[in-house]
Image 1 (cartoon, helix red, strand yellow):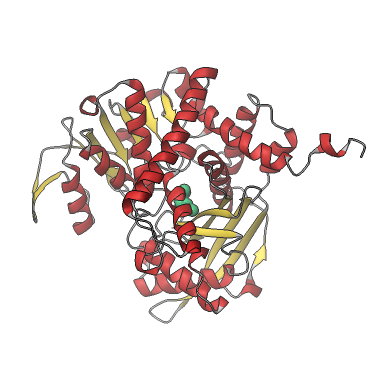
Image 2 (tube, protein in one colour):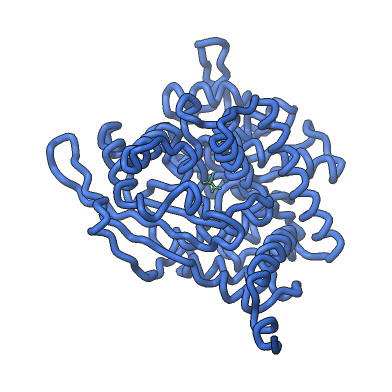
Length: 456
Ligand code: GLU
C-alpha cells in the first residue's frame, strides 16, 4: 500500500505511558530508525553543520505509546496499541500521518517521523516531523469498528497533538473519512471546532481541494521535471509502479495522461505487465469497483480482459523499464535485489523503500534515485496549504493548489538536482544536505557550544 492516504477502507489519557524504543528489525535484519539516521552521518560529512545539530536529530523529542480499548461489533473488546512520535519541532509544529497496519512498530514510526522532519525542511514549509501508527489490520474491521478505533486513538492522543503543536494526516490505510472522525473527536474534547488540528480531511469538513492526489501529483511533478532535464520524451519512457493505492494510482493516471507508457503496476496481491503500456483509467476504474487489479480495457461500464503477463511484486522491481516507482511499503530495495534493478531512474513515492546499504550499490551502477523526502513531499505540502486555509478561514481553488504545489516541487527538485550535479553527489545526499542545512541553521540559531563558550 502506498505511503500516504492509501485505501478507502480502511485512549483514556491515564492509560497512556511514555516509552522508549524496542527496536524492530527490517527486511535485512536491521533497525529501521538506526538505518534512517545513518544517512544523517553520510550527508553530514558533506556539510558545514554543527555536530550538535546532527546529535539533536538522532533523538526524537517525544514519544507516546497508548492502549486503545475498542468495542467490536460482536460486543467483545480489543485493546489495540498506538504510537505517536514527534521527532523535531525546531522549525515549527510537528507534522505527519497516522498509519493503520499490522506491522507498525515504534521503531518504524520513529524512522517515519525523522523522514517527515527532513521532508518538511527540504520542501521548506514551517513544520517539524512526526508520525503515528496503530498495530491493526484495518481490512479486518467493520466501518463502525474503524470509527470507534479512530475516535479512541484521538481520545488517548488529545493532550499530545494540537493545531500549534502536532498535526496528524493520512498515511498507509487511513483516509479522509478517518481524518474527519479524528477532527470531530478532537473538537468534541476541546468543546470548539478545531479543523486545523488535522489535515487530509473530507472537503465538506474543511479539507483542501487537491489534497487527495497531492502525493502522486508531487511525484509526477518531479518526473516531468526530470524528463525535461534529461531531454527524454514521455512516449519513450516506460514506467513501472509498485503499489496501486491512492498514491500509485494518482501518479500513474497523471503520467499516462501526459503520454508516458505505464507498462507495469502491482498491488499487495501481485502485478501485471504489458510492454506497450496500459490504459491506466481502465485499471483504476476496475480496481476501485472490484478491489482487484486486472489487465483490462474499459469502455464505459464494460471492461474486457486484455493480454498481459502477471508478475510478482519482486519481479516488477527488476523489470526493464525507464522509471521505477516504489509506491508501497518500506524496505523493498535492499542489498538482496539492488544489483538486479534495471531501471536507470527510481522515484520513491513510498517512505523508505530503499535501505541505506542499497544506496552505494545503486549509486555505483549509475541509477538515479529521486529520494522519498523529495519525491513524496507533495502530500505534506498540500497538507500545509489545508492548514493555512483553515487558519485563514479561506478555501483556495484547485488551480491555485496545483500551481502552488508545482512551484514548491519544482523549486525543491531543481535545488536538489543542481546541487547533486555540481557537487557530484547522489540526489539523496543532496536532498539531505539541503534539509540538514536548513535544520542546522534553525538549531544553531538557538545557540550551540561555540556560542555559549564565548565570554559575554
Ligand atoms: N503521510 C504523508 C507523508 O508521509 C503526508 C503527511 C502529512 O500530510 O502530514 O508524507
